[in-house]
Length: 328
Image (cartoon, rainbow, N blue to C red; front, side):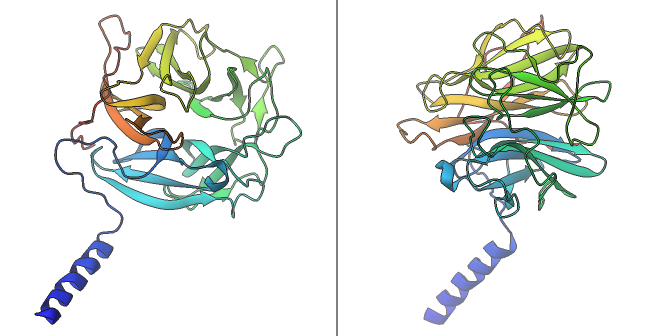
């Protein structure tokens, strides 16, 4: 009997190993979408898969690597461990966070902030990793930060890289309640001045704290950001709509915030549009009820809807999350 039981246990263990890191969700509750403390999620579609690139949410000195996750249906996610870390990025030593990802010229460019610099004399800022696959491994693209100085009062963190309809890439970034936009060189090695001679143009809307994000829908530019303190229950997401990526961005209102029956601190998000459809999902982090550790944040997904005027309806955060949505 002992030998049979031992064989069954060993076989079960081997089966788990062979199935990799895939996490099969069961029941009706799909939030959080994967296990572990993860925040600041960047959601995107590459080919026939959804991807999420989050911050590993831990004390700054432990935030020295990044994982990512892939899914074919928004519900079942596979974990890809340590796609980049501080052993590869020699100038980074802590606080790697808020990744943004771009596919260009058959390469994947992973933008991240590191070291949480507090002034222009400290080493750190926004860097780039490059890889041949979304899951890496990523190598340091520049061997130094892309941006390591404060401009217009904006801490160089929380970058989002946006491609306009004409193909031009822009970086939106900034903490400390200031947001800048900068025009990127074609090879991502630096920035190109605007026609007026400035390189970093401030576009800070009312209420902005951090975490910018942008998408285009029906010819309009939707600019979104996080408000409140990231460790508090008041963390939230607001937005504006403009006719260009430079604004002006007049705040419309909050669309994502805590629900005292579900979770607190809902913020620092991204948006996934199912290609070829008007179907949108908001990917964000939140803190479980009763959790007091600021770093204990989970990544979740809920549907995002628009009204007949193109305004974003307030998002209802849920335990259920979303149903399986395979990509065609």
